Image (cartoon, rainbow, N blue to C red; front, side, top):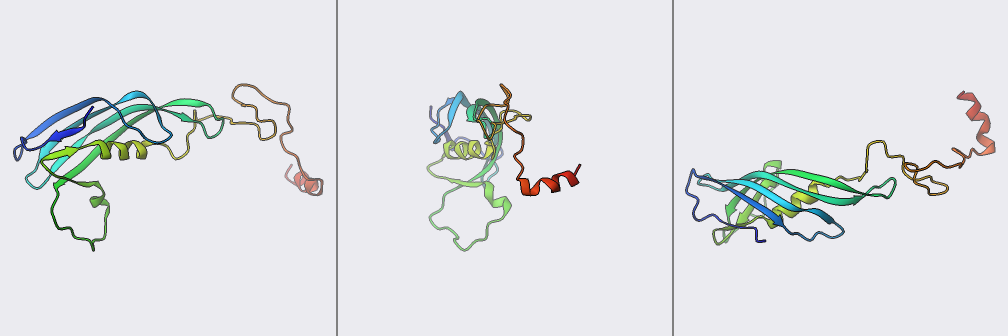
Length: 169
């Protein structure tokens, strides 16, 4: 499905709502379990087109502790200002936090696909954990401690340091 929006028909001060269902996107090493849905409100301010809304989908991730695959729900709010692309750009500009939500369009069409891709990547956790209390894998035998226990020693203490352990008791 295409994610192009024709903004030539949006008059100054006017707002329109656009919903995309079943968007498909290829991001390396990411398996979508539900199609991407994008619901946005576009407003022509006279200077720019503001795009505000929500992106939602689900993906399969691998837990960093136990290596089990789990489904992760993504719901990310989008808030971008689109300016008409000019022939000349200011290159010696220092970026501030307000400029990070600025994008450009040309030919009176806004393509949301790049913004959707960036938002999904930003919505992914830095460390994928299947559940808060995930026990992970045993460092000795490799068993998934969420499913079964193991008889491995908790800690192998170097004999030279064993006396220090007694001080903590």
